[in-house]
Image 1 (cartoon, rainbow, N blue to C red):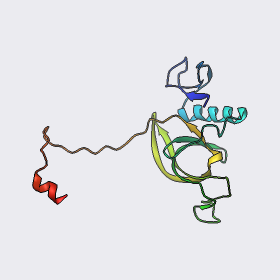
Image 2 (spheres, one colour):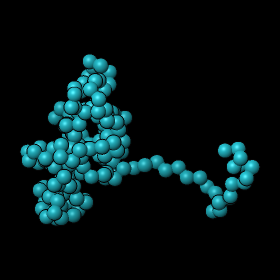
Image 3 (spheres, rainbow, N blue to C red):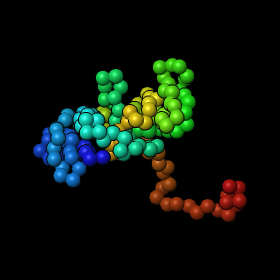
Image 4 (cartoon, rainbow, N blue to C red):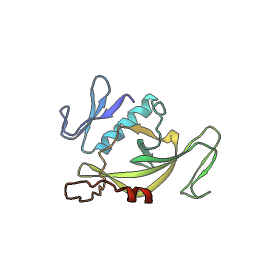
Length: 160
């Protein structure tokens, strides 16, 4: 992709810059990373770059939903013709031969951190633009061990 979103406060922007790869030419400054990604989406559409960097499962993407720019992560790719979602409903997309259906998890930015939303969207792969990874908040569960690890006893190994 010939453009990317820079770090907040870099390249003379108070917010997030939309940058051209290679030269780091500032295409615009935005209050949110989502807005910068939206400008990159618009530039790529106008230059015919959409579809050149094909997103895969786990990739972060930007897409248009009605008049709103959304950011998400590809959860599932269906490369066979048919329905993805509830057939003939607003929650489904029908793909024909040569088209690819995609299930995308929406993300929302909150204080500079991207958080997963409950919404999933069914889209066509051609409607997505791959973007760089987001800074995503993750819940980490740790177990207290008192600072020491105990080896697994042979009797415990046999039970596994």
